[in-house]
Image (tube, rainbow, N blue to C red; front, side):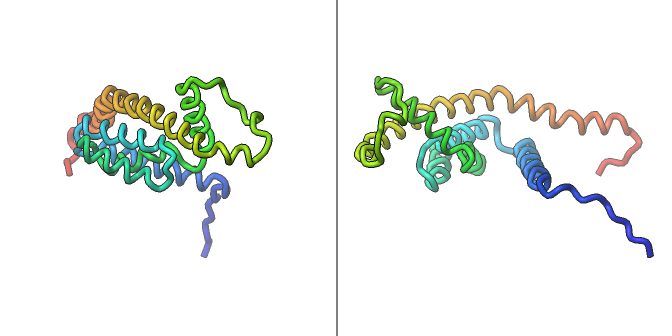
Length: 178
């Protein structure tokens, strides 16, 4: 008996194909969703807003609560909080901190100003407030932009998603419909 062997993808590419399958799955769920465009946009906006907050573990709870208040899609709100994830925490929260520092009227900040960890820890409470202040502002702007982009782009994406199936039915008129 002859055994066929197919080339296996390299190990480093397996995680990439898993991510691609996962993204495609969520894209298809979004396109097939029966929620209104406004509900989806409100849910994604709430999730992106909550994702900008430096409250690890509480982001999803805040996003779903906010989506409940604005009548947004709750699962998409929870999913949108992943805009901040372990890969983006440091640059995102550094940016939020810089925005908070700038909005509070302080000169630009560099880590070289603190010569020791003791000085850094003394200023911890003030730094946390600056981070939260900047995160809220960045979150509001990012959430509103997400909401506006969703309202603008989602109808077009849904129309494009539905179009190929209608074209396929027209190209095969004798094919029985299921």
